[in-house]
Image 1 (cartoon, rainbow, N blue to C red):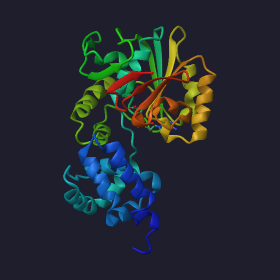
Image 2 (image 1 turned 180 degrees about the vertical axis):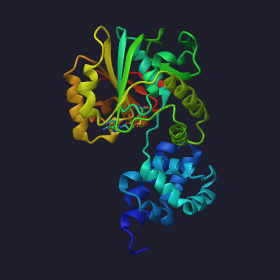
Image 3 (image 1 turned 90 degrees about the vertical axis):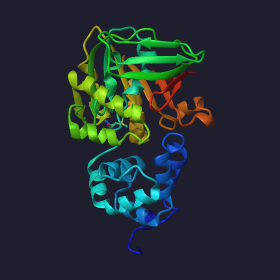
Image 4 (image 1 turned 90 degrees about the horizontal axis):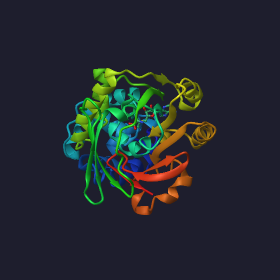
Length: 330
Ligand SMILES: C[S@@+](CC[C@H](N)C(=O)[O-])C[C@H]1O[C@@H](n2cnc3c(N)ncnc32)[C@H](O)[C@@H]1O
């Protein structure tokens, strides 16, 4: 092992630390399997050595675990899973090198909707970091909001929907109508085709093992998106935003939004995007994790730092569940 770079093998390496943090903070309470796997990896010199073969940006737990499941590693206790990870490493490495964490969660529409239904329509939606575009159809999904008093409000699109999203809502008025959307478009470094079976298999693998409701929703939302293909331009959001925004129709309110995207950008590129948004007439909705725009972080108390911060036109308006399960207005 002496010829391997030390950051790839040591249990105090950044890679081990990433897995420890992922297990203890991100997976705990959400996926018992990934919590156990991540904490197992963090103390496993042999598996850390394998991870050391990957470029740093490809070592993330989310990517590696999804690649492992695509390669056939069973959802099983870590001692059994680790033996399979080692046995199937060449296939795991191949998938990790060719795929990216493009998790597309239609349920995030539930935390956008309180804002979308408040913006004068009709709306033109432009999503940056759209993945397969599943968040570009918020008007075609059904929602069930439960407020703090336990009152349930159901919103159904005309003609029904195969996608139903549950969301807890607090300190805000429950949306009472779906927006009228007259135009939709996206930008992504690697646009995905929701009609492609291999793509769907990968998006499915990115869903954590215990999240069965998300798996069903993925299939249903992909069918909705595949039925009305939306143009998703391939490239960097900063490079393409002006052109894409310019093609929105007159007579509609342009809404530029993103969820779980800007963490992938450098602080400089995030600042560039923020400046662009400040200079446009579009409504800007940002739904991102704590730390993405440090100036927003003051609204997330220490016990809520795992939440996303939803901001409208650069002002935080709500704390949201990262997968769209809750919305709490500020
Ligand atoms: C975690 S996925 C989120 C997808 C979707 N927004 C959602 O919430 O379900 C992040 C997406 O952002 C895209 N992305 C990351 N950096 C980007 C950039 N600089 N320009 C365009 N897209 C980017 C990735 O390719 C990926 O599809």
